[in-house]
Image: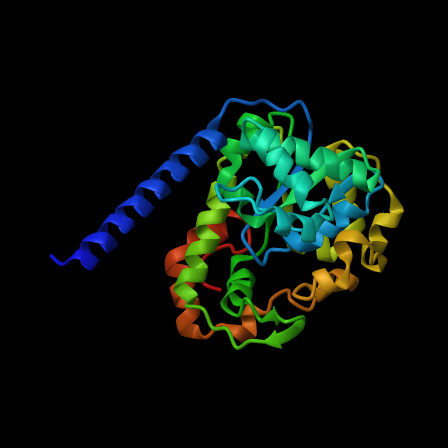
Length: 302
């Protein structure tokens, strides 16, 4: 073995050892014992099920602030600059909290307390679809949380997942994409995430909100939701789409133009025209039972 190869292997070894140490340190920081006394509203569910719509609706309430998707409950690194862009809390303040907090849960608590202060609101909410996969962690460290599981007809969800993302931002410009994800992967994602949430059925802290109920009768549906989270009903919530401030800034939400539009029913039932007979058969085989369990179909004859 020549000298250059030996040196390269040594560098690789040091790099791998460093990565292992960081993984152990991050794991310990995430799992460190901490119990919050706050009572946040947490939103999760399969992507493309209406979680972003629900985020801006919650954020419209005078007591609640629900900023952009934070990923803070997920086991991943936290980047101060990204959090500054999304929440307008200085990166230096985010970095300080990261340095001084003994656990990820404590950091989450402090960060959103600061966000409440910034927004002049008394309670925080957080929307990240994959929260649904970390409910054990959330309820362990935030036992007073209220979790909203957003559920949408799996057939429509899969149609949306298949073409997502449909756009991305490059140098401030929105670029249209021609995404076509494998339908089998989209079906598996819907089944996995929905089942993860259904484990908590019966827990008084857990609430299922159907996307279809929201778009068909928004006022009745939202009154029930806000009763669950313990906040008074405010008619102004129905005008959520008129707000352009803070986390609704169009420049920060270029990939979610729908947050500035009123609720529509145009996406309901899209599977009728978007799914081929062969794709319907694939769905029935993998997710037909769950669709029936949720009441979206009586049997697999659809």
